[in-house]
Length: 312
Image (cartoon, rainbow, N blue to C red):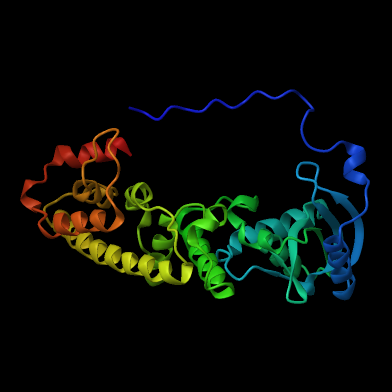
């Protein structure tokens, strides 16, 4: 039986959050005052202060030296093409209208969602970047929720998540993995991220749906769960090695389709009847490893591969 969809509660128009007067008024919090001091210490200027119209937290709009801002160290790798596109757009418009988001970090500022814009400004020789600042340093770990520059693909998301998970574990070895579901988004991305780190050309999209159904956040410290995730990534790569051998065998038999990997992975995945729970992660990998080892190339028919192509 399909899960029942929860209906969103109807709300009255203009009934939530702060009023315009509340956004602009009130006494700033001590954290907001510290944030403004950090801006001045970095050589920047506070342009305005206000409260978030939804949650009420104090924020600041500031002009910061470009040299005082760095991307968070666990972000996706930069796209040179996207940076060039942004550089051209700012040059043509003669304006930079999209402030980055930033938080204080170790005497400087980190931006969780402005890497490409910051890089474009640096290439252009800009001295200043406008930034929307929050005193909440935890925002630096909410990249996936905050990023609005460029849609993340699976590889980018997985690499960011595994880097964030390591950063969180280093900052607090007792940090419980399940306590960071918002920041990490999907438990399977940690395992997939390890796989991409070890094999940058890993075809994670073929395996991600099965892993997502099986993996869940664990109620244990990240320092303990990360080795578990890495071990699963190693097992996944070993399965992928065997899948690559199977694909080579199919090509020798004359099969030629860009979806051969998806076809093979679909054949070695366990069948899960509708409404039944997904297997535990290690049981899933056990099943796929066994099926991959015993895969019989002689039983594959052209129509079966064609069905996979049509489904894609």
